[in-house]
Length: 223
Length: 89
Image (tube, rainbow over all chains, first blue to last red; front, side):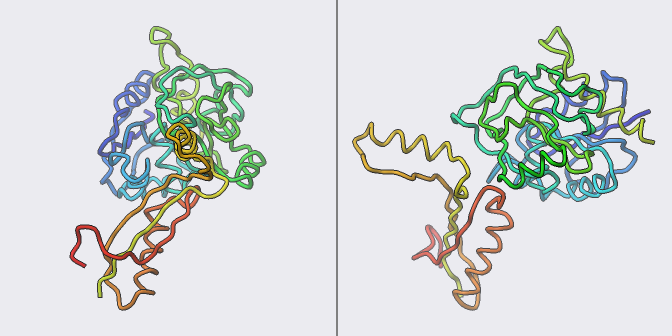
């Protein structure tokens, strides 16, 4: 059975949502405490939302020194699927596993609302089940969610097809309306919106399913 | 020797600074006109044990680049302070 690890830092607060989403898709999910030094027997790893280490200094700045991050980096280097959601995305950029950085929203407000995303690339482990150009309604919930990078990085993101998702209407000042990016290989991906909170029409949207389903069962397809 | 060191972290030129922009827009309302190019940032004070000023600054710069700033969006600079606040340097 496909088994997904959900990394828990002190201050994470979306780990149960991630666990429930993965379980709802029919896979097994288990927590990985941040002090673990190895990741074995997992088909994929999720870094959930929250405020790892209190977001002290900068979101993700201290989490990147948690022992588990070296294991996550090794897992990613071997091609393992890694997904960072919201704070998890911030951690992945701070750790250098994804390009760019997330800074304070334009307008300096905490934004919690549904957003419409456009699938830009289906090459990443998160978007492989979706269709290019597909629109997905998925909520955001963040203060530091403005994706930022220099022009050179933006060009290379576009050239290498690393922009997984864009906002239809930019809510936070992100460069290039970027909502989610992947690494060059496509196996590490981060996004500010919360697909794990868009799993049921009863709760507003089930559009997160196509993303997480692609991510969770990607390893099973590859092996 | 112990050296009081101040590390200042600001967003790099060209990186949007919504905090600085908001402060700049608020100033005229208080009667402060002619203030432009406001950039918000962080300042860290510390005491560093080193052989001389140069090596204290070198250490401060290294730790600022490794932890206190995110080089993707921020610049860090270190200088010798006059005294450490609340410290015993």
